[in-house]
Amino acid sequence: MKFRNYEVGCLWGDRLQSAGECAAQMRDFVRIVREIVPELCWYYEDYRSRFFDFPDDVSEINKKVISPVNGDRKGVPLDRVYSEVGFSALIFSAKNNCAAIRAGLGRAGEDAFNSVAMHFPEKGPIAETILNASTLERLFVASVKCWKPDWAWIDHTDINDTDFSVPPVYWFLYGNKPKESVPSLPAPVEVHAIDSLGTYIVTTRELYDRTIPAHRDTSEAVKQRLRDANWLPPPAG
Figure 1 (tube, rainbow, N blue to C red):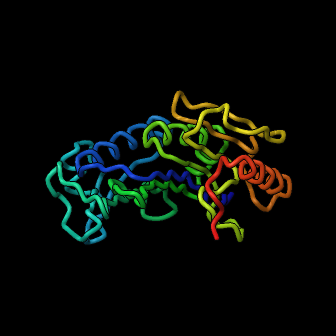
Figure 2: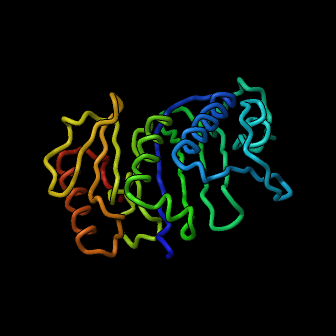
């Protein structure tokens, strides 16, 4: 069975972080993901396209995985910051049909944005293990707790939609707002708090597919109600 290309996305603004802080947060996130999906092994790629095991030591992660976006070599001092461009990181679970974690971290300023996206394999035993509502929800909640974003979501990236607003409203949606701020939403939508961080919305307990009319109609209704309540940022365009 081949699945759609699902992803968990997290987005936040101004947050200055050093190389060492970014490396530590990547380490912590990989540990959490391993607890949920132990079948996934994680690797980084060197400049010769060779794969190596993702290290567990912050200094090694900084040397091998964390890249200053300004073009400086990996392995800058752990306390180094790049407020305008930050750091990037990319790790994989395999060379093909893989899970991947892509991060842009450590940017600061009024217009800064930082992000993490986790992609999943589309076929095979590991895809079948991960790509269900229960496991994806655990990964989603863990992502929010680790990264503490302003917004987070789950969607599939081949969605055909003319609305490119962020955050996308399809299946799972998190905002760092209290549960009481969420307006009344149509059935079968669920609303849940994540500790004291914020609230997430689930539009269906099925594996979301934008081509299914009921899934599409529910997510569109949710998006409109959230916009009417000014719960979402202004739409793109």
